[in-house]
Image (cartoon, rainbow over all chains, first blue to last red; front, side, top):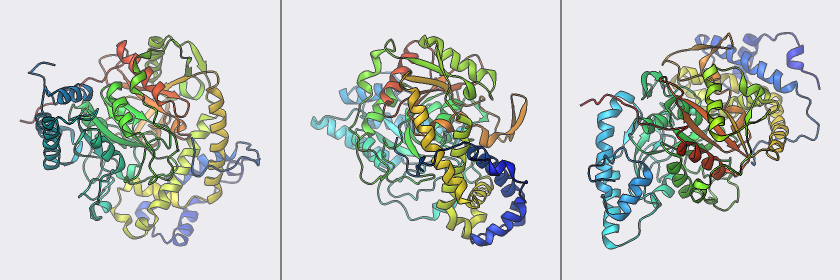
Length: 67
Length: 471
């Protein structure tokens, strides 16, 4: 498994947020955009870290966790 | 206890014994508690509703029951308060938000409130929290910040800031709280009190406002491990109204509290959990390890990825929960919460699914460690309570934002639902720190046994804060 999030060019998260908001039915006030994009950047980095771990195909999701 | 005991400051176990034997009436305990809340809480700002009428009536029922010769429960007359995401009959469940206080009042109490009251406890109020529990600071733009009773200019920790502060300020001996990523363990550390985050699926969440269903836990906070155990034992038991509850029998913790730790294999976690914090955070763990005679060490594998995965799942699940409110009422959120939820709503689904798949791997890897050890010790937070409003701190020479990084040591543990007793450590004249006493799933009794041993040895303690009386 490769770490796509880390290997691909840095995405334009401003453009992504602007495109994603109407898809989700959200209105993005221009005053909030900077903070939202900053959080998206942190989430993107987290996704890169998680995605960089070589999971076996048999690792099933645990959406409702049972301890 | 003597006739001059200040019942507003007594431990729950002492109150229950005294009320059960008639040494003091439940009404007297509740009156002393309500009086202390009125005097002290204006400085702390932990309560969002005081339920004097309800509490007084409930206390009168207990006194009448005793007068009839009825047996009272193990928490007879013990005042308690709850984070305001618990349903309380007659109140809207605000969950720290402005939006939810427009909801219809709850028609009945949350399951855990009903269970505590069935054991004789008396609900005296609701407590402040970070909006929708997406918080580690105890700050709230709608209700004002809950202040740290040990240093009013500092954070209480969150999101269960009201619960930690009310217990530390001696306003109640017992509070209920929730913990998704650290929201019991962080305020326990910052406010210097005890907290129990049980195993995921152990205690019913029915009648509480959710945040991240696959990570949400409820649990008690108190000033002693015995009080935690009494409350925890009273709240156990199946509940079909919480779909995530495991079908396990009640496993009481109180009977084992005094068993000591000689038979336990206790280890300190190195690697990720030994870096990225102030030296005092690790000194607190070393202090606890010394008191337990723990010389083993373990490495919890891939903890940084576990934290990242918990972060992703939290953002996505939280955003999905609030999506309609984000569409229609975005301006009514606390901006610090809103902007994170908006970003979470935009997370591509494969990133979240990957985090859930990693969770499966990580759980198996960590559970394997518990074949070699019974208990693992890690810091609760990387720092002592920051100042209110502080937005950055420096860890290992790197300046980082405060809000998300307070939970670096709690998130990898709750991510897989492990039980934790959070114990308060006072290293010097400064503010307290916390240590997480972690065990394998369903071993809450073991966590509490270790906490109780530490308390008996004088290694951990939860003193009542000295807060200026407003009268």
